[in-house]
Image (tube, rainbow, N blue to C red; front, side):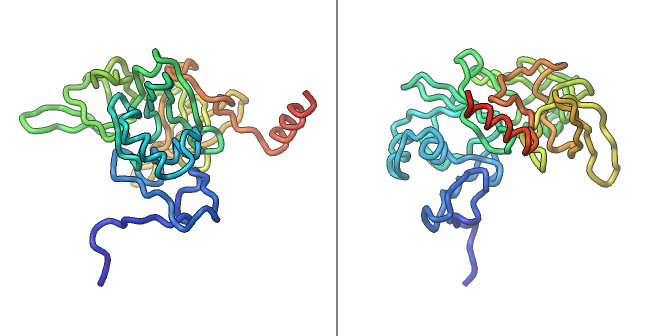
Length: 262
């Protein structure tokens, strides 16, 4: 007999690398629930609580924390300990007064990025597409599967909107344009931050965007992987340590040695 429906389990060796689970820590890994982010691009709540924050020692402890309704993701209480939190999601733990934004470091992993209560009131969402609904109601779809009706007519696909988490309304938007600061959310350059230099259009294939980082290094990536995070060189969200600058192996070694001598 074959499988019916989705797979219920995930083997540890097939879990995404950026979860950083050790090979010998068991046969299985937590399988994320279906939700706003893809399995390979999310971080289940249990891994965030147990492996990153170390607030739980075991699977059962992490489950108990979630079931006590202590964890909010984007302002909503989530009791599902396998809930797939993803890029730009705001995780709030009111009991400890902590706020986190899930954001990539230059190695392409979700890092523990603490933010202020003020910054936790909003998040940035990339506009995936614009559609027309029944009765000619325009709406847009964001990267985290939100549907927002009657958006500003100036907002187009690939732009970024600033979303008020409490109301779910659009506060502001940033155009996808040369000169704006972006973060790369996929591919080989995952986690890097830079300024858009140009965009190559390839009908029938993937559009390519050329980006230049603060060190002057240029790189190219697909349009789908580019997420605008601010106007000009000013980012609208705080960035983790490293500021999205990828160092070469030699530069990393020098920095490590300098840290040891200090």
